[in-house]
Structure formats: C-alpha cells, structure tokens
Image 1: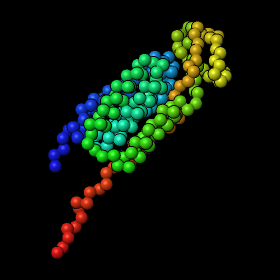
Image 2 (image 1 turned 90 degrees about the vertical axis):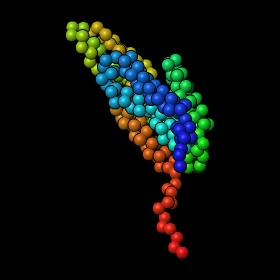
Image 3 (image 1 turned 90 degrees about the horizontal axis):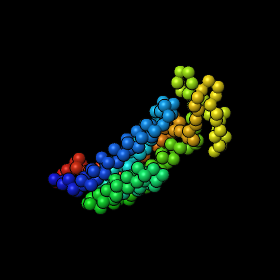
Image 4 (image 1 turned 180 degrees about the vertical axis):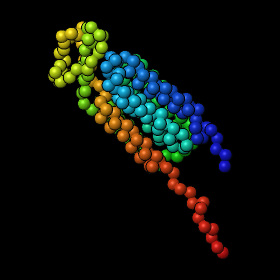
Amino acid sequence: MVVTFRTTAPQTAVVGIGLSFALAVAMATLRSVNAEPIEQSAEVPGNVAFAVVFAVPALLALLGLRGRPALLVAAGVLDLGLAFVTLMSLVGLVFVVPGVLFFVAAGQMQGGWPARSIAAALVAVILGTAAFVALFARDDPICWATNSMTGETVRLDADRFVNGASISIDAPPGTNEAGCSSDSISTSEAVAAIALVATLLGVVRLLSKPPESRTGAAPAVG
C-alpha cells in the first residue's frame, strides 16, 4: 500500500517542527548570551535543559507524524503555553506560529483518534508542563563581583545577599562591580527537567504505539 506524504506527514507539520526546534535553540542561546559571564559558566546544564524542554513540542510532533494527530494537538497546546509564559519577551510570541501549524496539520491528517492516542496527548501536556515547572522549581540566585585590579569575575555566596525576594549587595572590598540574578537553573533542576522529558517521550511512544499486526499468524489448515 502506498501512503501519501499528505496522509502521514503534512507539510505544515514539517515546517512547524523545523521552526519549533529552531526557536528552542534560539531561546536557549539568547538566555545564555544575555547572562553575565559567571552565570553562563554556572548555567551550562541549565541552558541545555532549557533547550530540551522548549523542544518538547517539536519532539512530540515528530512522534505524531505517522497518523497520530492527537500528538500534534498536544504539541500545539504546549507551544501556545510557551508563548503565554514568555509573554514578557515579545520573542516568545513567535511560538504561536508553530503551535497554529501543528493544529492545522492535525486537521489535515487522516489518522484516527483512538483512546490510547488521546491519553498519550494528555500525558504529554501534563509532563511537558511539569518539565517546564521543574526548571524553576526553586529560587537559585547567582551573585558575583568583579575584581577591580584583574577584571576577573568571581562567584559569591548568594545566601549572604539574598533574603527571600529581597536582594541587597554592595561591591565587596577590592571589587568595582557586583550583582545578583533573581534566579538560575541549577544542575538538579536541569536533571529533573530532562528526566521528565525522557519519561514523557517514553510513555507517549508506548501509549500511542499502534497495535501489532497479526500478519505473522500461522495460516489456517484445511
């Protein structure tokens, strides 16, 4: 049987996947570039996890290409969710585009909507949201100071300067600049988020897997 490209992989889905992957990398890159040097070195695992979590809609859409429109809907929901939580940055609004493309692609598909596939989509939205929340599960501020003689930036103990939502810091002796970030993605948060994404992909793939064909059954004798 010949399966057409439109049936299994609408072009709109392919475009949405490419755009969604590109946006995940771009957002993680911007997050790193806009950070202080000490934050960049401290948040390497965090930025990797950030990119992985933001790439979840694209990964879901990839799994949904072969007749699983429910997964494309889940990908669209998560992309719109990312657009909502990044509203403070106008760049985040571009996540609306792949989200809409995934919805359109789901409507173009001729695959069915079995209960297992719908359950997989619900699990994907729940675990995808949990992975994003895990990135910022607790406040992990980073404080730093720049040596006035050498220009070297060193990390300071944030507990000395951060009290709840209040941050109070002066440049310590021998430094000409000091500051604190309000939060960062710790290594433990990064590991938890990536673990949730891995669980999401494994569970979704298992739930949405079509029943095995019975073509290998022995022919009837008679």
